[in-house]
Length: 222
Length: 253
Image (cartoon, rainbow over all chains, first blue to last red; front, side):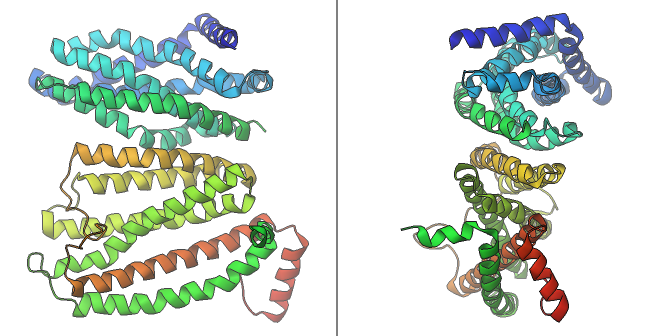
């Protein structure tokens, strides 16, 4: 069973490296959106540092939305999703593998470019670490929540807008706790409690979301 | 033990039962609405701090309660529909969602209208207002998802899954928003020990809550019946029903 997990992750990563623009485009989108804010509201470092957590997290949410398209869509079109559902392993498990691979391809790069954004938005080191940790814990939750939305809308022709309608309200707690943690770090307070809350949400999402995703896929692919 | 419940898994039986129950809900909703409204707006004493503008709670609080009540209804129905594969429960989810959305909108609108004289602004990013707004977004997402499917059986199932995802998420959203910011006054009547509200003000409010709840029941049954008719329109009993009602022109469903 663990082998199946590895196999699915491997297949996803291989497919992604053969079509690199699919991975790179959401990252560029993320960087460009963050760049637009200083251009739009001015370059005062104090102002930028104040609103940076919100900007980065909203941009991360939007970038995540863009990347969800490729989570199940191609597999749905070429039929390999049905093969996955027919496989002798539990669908929840295989779906978890797919989401893990998806996070490696979309969440991790966002983490990697975040130091660059910290420079852009003149964040201090302490604030940057808070940002980094919230992104580390928060982006997997986004992937899991988004996967529910994708699984529900995959069979629909105009699923894209619907996906954002479904997913964005559900991701509000992550946005709130992450920006609160980063704000706390800005003022030099301890943000471990907020991180723990985020981690609790991650645990809940990891345990519950695969069931919702599997059920949604069974609805969509039928 | 549950045998009496089984016939109602059949759409026709449910249709007839809900048709019988509907007038009772309306009979409860209308008089309580008139009594509660007149009592609350004209006879209840004015608040010593807020003056007459507090009277909007006679609409605001029941609407907000029923906005959440409707969601609980949907969540229970969605659970039943998904676990025991009962299609009618999924129809209930679809029938309830728009009504819940409208109640949420009423709560938001009256909240904003009350906030203007009290807080000096139509909209404040207060915890309860925000979580109510997010509840509205969740409702709209469910409705949009339901409408996006052309196959209504799949639509009902998808909407049920989303409802259950939402029911886990809504308390998290609520508490996150509460910790995030709070301006709204604390709960007035949900405290069990002693309501922090004068009895003369409280009674009309309770009457209004009963009225809004009964009206919610009425509207859900009404839409539920429509949903059954739409989905079962090819069944002989629906065709017979439509023929008989169009021939003697009695009651349109």
